[in-house]
Structure formats: C-alpha cells, structure tokens
Length: 324
Image (cartoon, rainbow, N blue to C red; front, side, top):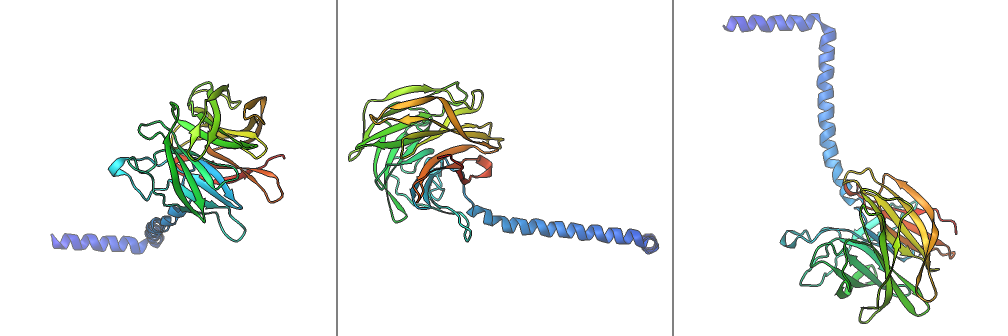
C-alpha cells in the first residue's frame, strides 16, 4: 500500500516537472487566490470608514452661513431602541480644503415617549434661533411636534406638543413670516395617490399654538401612480416662494427618482396661492429627495438645497441651480 502511494507521488512529480507551463499556471492561480483573499480582508477592514459617511436625510433646515440641521427617520422601538442612532445632525458644506462635515447631535427627547420616532421634516422659524421638528404621525403615540432652540452647535427641546389635528404620514412642514405674522404649512405623503392636501394656518410661540387650518388640493406635475409621493418635502424662501419635492420610491434598493418645483407663493395676508403651471427646477434620477430648504447667500440671492433619503445607499446634500 505504501509502495503504491509512493509510486503515485513520483508520477505526479514527474508530470509537473515535464509540464513546466502547467506548473506556472498553477502557481499563478494560487497567487490570484491569495491576492483576492487579502483584498477581501483589506476591504472589510477599510469599509469601517464608510460609517462616517452621511446617512439618509428626511428633512433639512438652514441655520447660518454654511451650517444646516438635518433630521433622520430613526424609529423609536422602546427598549430595543438604539439611542446612538442619528436623529438630528449638524452639517457643514464642503470646501476645496475639506469634505462635507456632519455630526450627530445629542438631544434630550422629552418623556414619557422619549426618543423621536420617524422625524420627517424640520423648518427654521424665520428671524429666530428656533426650529420646528415633526414626526410623521404615522404611529401613535408618536405624533409630536418639537420646538427646539439652537445655540453654538447645540440643540435643546424647549417645547413639545402633539399634532393639533389628525395626521397621517406627514412628509413636509415649513414656517413663513410675512410682516409680524407666522404661517405654518404642512403636507402629507399621500403615497400612490393622485393628489395631496397642502394645509396652512397661523402659528404663534410661547406657548406653541396653531389657528384654524385651511387647505388646498395639490396635484404634482411629477405625475401619480404606484409608489409616487406628490410631496416629499416643502420649503418657503424669504420672498414667500414655495418649493416642493416629489419622489418615486419603489423600495429600499431603488431605483429612485425625484423632481423639485416652485409651485406658488405665500401672500402678504398669510394665505397661499398656487401657480397654475409649477416651475420645474430640477430632476434628480437615481435619488429620492426628502429634504428641501432655502438659504440666502451673502450677496442676497436665494439658494435651494436638497437632501436625499436613498435608503440602502445613504444620502447626500447638494445645492440646485436656481434662476433668481
């Protein structure tokens, strides 16, 4: 038996020695296997850097200069919740010297519910350091509005109330100021429906209080159909122009698409006028825009910024080309 094994080994050695080309190929295969195995280990180690990339954005508000606040739709799962999960973030625009910077802000969310659930929108209260954050209201008891104060890159919740009317999947809120009056505007997702309602009312602070709501039906030029959201966010600039995003969201892997429009105006008497033909500002293929905000540049020009919630692919923050 031992003799037979030895003879077989000698035959194999003779085979490889007589076939040097085959031996070279075999050695090459072993080298490739080792290379790709090492590459996989290297990628697994290096991929940890991706954790510092921007997560998906479900709402966006300009603070000052190059600073923005972003909200994330992390869920409140009770005792299973992860308190380190991003819910409110501070973002700074990139420059030639540094990339986009962002950091998770630690917030003391009020009890008894505690952590936020499905924050879908945030808006600045003009000419103040206050911001309003909104849960979608899809799931009770998480139907809250948070009034937050910003100071030196920190945010503190100063008041919390429940939505003053029945809501379902609110995707967009905005606050506009005309004269000495503030107007609160919101819209629901209306996923796969032909239209949604844009609702508005007066809003006052200290305490946070709402007036009687009015509404108008809005049909997005983006179209309608399965997985289409007529409004995925909205914003109002200093001049009272109203901007909205519409989005197509088939599932967490995409493929997404979105568009941003200028759809109307907030009037001097705190009412809304919708344009008969909304102006398309941008089409964004491959991404789901869920955050829209405006900024006034140092030269006084209005700028529009978008944030995306691309689910498995994370998110990004970008300016749009706007004809002022």
